[in-house]
Image 1: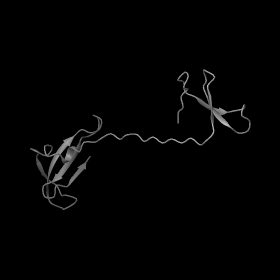
Image 2: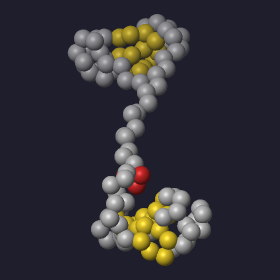
Image 3: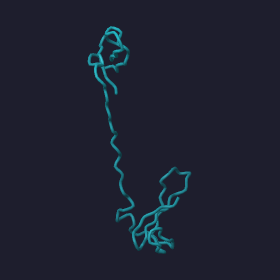
Length: 111
C-alpha cells in the first residue's frame, strides 16, 4: 500500500519511530517534516480489472462462407467440420487452424 504525503504529495516511507519509543512505526515523508504514526494494522487489496474478451469463434459471421474438410470431431466423432486459419501468434510461428463440427457445432483448434 502506498501512502502519499498530504503536504507535498511525495511517497512516504515506513520507518521505526524513535520519538514514540518502543516498537512503533510511522510513515515519514523524505522531503518534508510530515509524519504519521501507524497505530493499527493497515491492509489494502486492489483487484485489477480484467480485459473483456470477444468470443470471435461463436459469432455467426465468423463461420459464414468458410470451407469444410474431412476431420473427426473430438466430441461427437462426426467426420466433417468447417475450418479457418488465423495468425494468433508472432509472424514466425505457424498459423492456428480452428474447426467447427458441422453436426454438433463444437469448436476446437490445432496449432
